[in-house]
Amino acid sequence: MKLIVAALSLVTVSTVFALEESTPEAPPIEVGIVVGSTDFFAHNFSTRNQVLFFRAGTFTTWRVLGPGATFTSTYARQALDGVKLEVASYEDGVWRTSRGFDLSTLCDSGADAVWIQEGPQPPSWLEVGTQLTPLTPEPSGLPSGLTTTTNEAAPVMEPLHVPVVTPVDRPNGDTPPVLDERPLPPV
Image 1 (cartoon, helix red, strand yellow):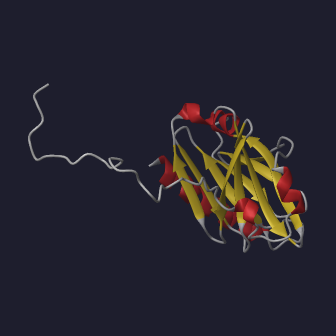
Image 2 (image 1 turned 180 degrees about the vertical axis):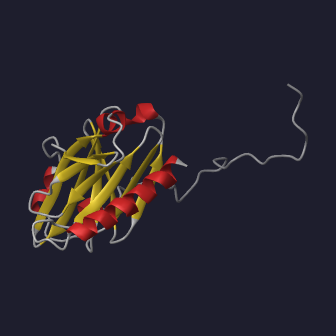
Image 3 (image 1 turned 45 degrees about the horizontal axis):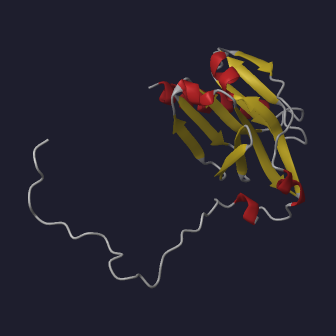
């Protein structure tokens, strides 16, 4: 239920931001994010791909949000501890980033949403109730391989593949046992 309320909040506030877009000093919203104690919700309002980078220690994973796409996830609250989120997009040979946000801090802040606007250094806003306050993110932690990327569909953003060895010539007796249709003994 909270996820539905958060989604409606994102749509409502995006409409308010859209009304403010008519003024030249208000860049459009690119991504809206809701971090709850058990669910995560992100929506891409822009016309280009946005990449959500999740970082915990030295481990980094990502989700690509196409224009108008939504990403949701559920978890236990403790899973947010030590996890940083960074939103990035690739345009004209340059990666633009929101810089990092600590997900446990956002969750514990009681914020209704985080808004990331378009721009060379995207400004971020924290929404609590009807109040919007500037949000100061942490330094960027994007993987170093992205700084030289020249293509939005670069291999560094593809899911990792771990090869599995499949034997071609099996020795005799190296097959799974044949199971009978006898019932199992009682425990």
